[in-house]
Image (cartoon, rainbow, N blue to C red):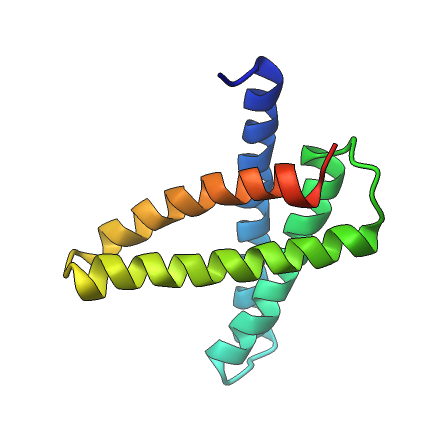
Length: 130
């Protein structure tokens, strides 16, 4: 059963994720519209890095502030976790849409929910251990 502290922590995790997503989208828009990068794919890579950095900083300072491990250790575990989650995301989307032939849009929503919970648990247990 979840405690009130964990529910509040999860709410902060969601807020942090929304902020990181907004930073990702804002950086993408800036790179495409203002800097006028021709490749949207390259622009998105740089924008994603900005969003990932914001996510890490927010998790470290706002979601899991009691963690005492070094930044380097946390960052390496964070990157490893998100690489695994990206592969899981692709695997689940492939299973849902390619193998089972279900609508990819619904799959995106469902897989995103799985990823939200998995990333919270992974960050809580593996990255920002308190």
